[in-house]
Image (cartoon, rainbow, N blue to C red):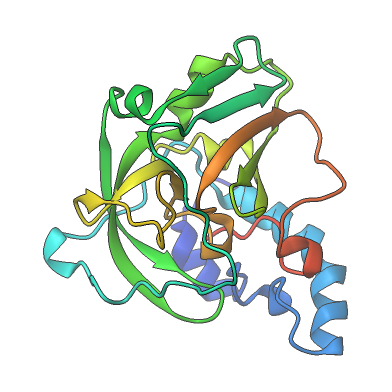
Length: 235
């Protein structure tokens, strides 16, 4: 080991172990796929965690390649209407400094912008520019305890997700409030949503209102994961 270094994405292509294709991933479209996906999910997660470089940025795209109409807005029965003035992002759990941040607080922090590919498990992708605050800046303010390994995200519409802490602290994991240099729309998750090039789209929660940092995964992992989707969902 260490004699030959193969880039992560090339390794995935050569081995057939991408998070989308490995052993049918976590998205079950038949009885066989559901059984196989569940049986091999620990293997998926172990390989993806091994390949993740928590500090290495993913190459970005020039602004000229942004696809303004390619990001599909999933339609559900309920789109929350949130007063941006009254909004608070709460950060709690196993932390020494619980937070309750207004949008004014968040927008006073250094703005990070990235132009990345958003990839959906349904098979489509879009190059999008996101702007916001690095999640690791918020986590740092909360002063997590040494044993924290996971971050839970709750949304105003009842959606919930969980991430490994290494992915949450990746420099390109943002709490975004801009899309393509414009204020984020309600349909895209305003006032605050997750955005990252290292996770599939269903991990990138919209309308995030609460972040809970914990040392152990709870019985529920995520809205789609609890219905059979892969938990780690890395790219």
